[in-house]
Length: 451
Image 1: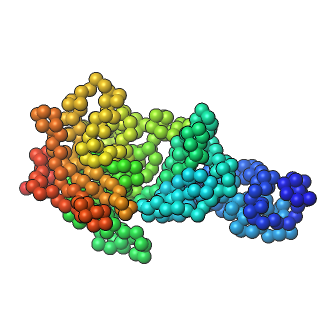
Image 2: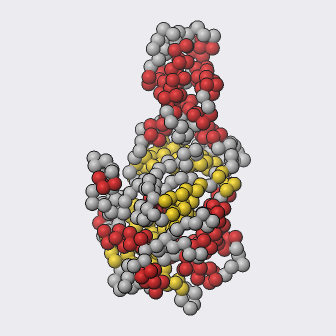
Image 3: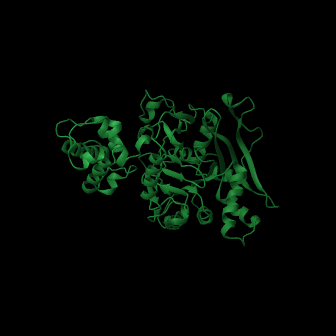
């Protein structure tokens, strides 16, 4: 007797090929039941940060295989593949474990792509068939209490480690799966040697923005001075442009004796492990996947943080109208040296995006009435973008000096990326004729940077 029926009756005692065993539904069902019985659900979540998670799962799988096949030593490769299939991400496990991969994009069972070191490339990873891919997508949806169906063919899932998975099935398209891995990247603005931050000197990644070609030495000096002078910063850019990484780099310049309150949807900012830093994180309901489903939102945490005596207030990202409004209120109450990020395509566009978000909920507020508090709230607007060669770069630094009598922003370019010769030779130029406005000069003078 062979196959699933033999296993079900306990008569099989010899291994078949690993590929055959991985398609044996009876074997998979038995091992899955054993895992669910022995291990806590959190351990079985493929995105869980539980220590020794893989080793604990493999121990249970090994023990069960030993019982099923007492005359054979369980193959370690089969044990790992069963772990990935039943309590992991199946064929995608190796991609998710690769530290150079930031995005995993599955367009179909035999069409898998990754973003590695900021460049898209095809992957040799394959699913057996559509059913194999669909089963993984159903598992991911179930992890956040959702279900893929004709009524809900698109699901956006925020996983336990902060990674985001987007799932699409027919009739919209697909099956397609996109996973943006949660990463906490630490990159200095500028440093002479990688060893200065205790980094691995053999590492191939640049240790700072200047070495990576993301800004010039003059820009790094200017931004470091801006942080020490307690200027308020708004960082704009597209998804994956490097907004969070740049914000973390700027926070590394904050003196360690200042109290910084950091508010995030999920913990992303890789701030230095020193200084007086307090983290606050949103609370999400069982089915929550975006800001609309949060039970404790960024806006709630900003309001609470004002009672925690912050020197600086940092909001990981402004996404919703409530967050935009509350942040403007908070930054207009004297918390100098604060900062946040927003999705936008440039410095000017970032200000317009703020206006749009606030007016989406507070329609009775005129645009002109919004511009003055926005101009008071922020001193510098930075635009981060990705170049054609994959580099993340600070493309624009502008001072928000105020508003004119006509209600127009006084946005003064300080640095701009010159890409006229193409991305491969991009340069960062100080804008001729730039002079700090009265508000910025007053802040620099207050902090001792001007006589």
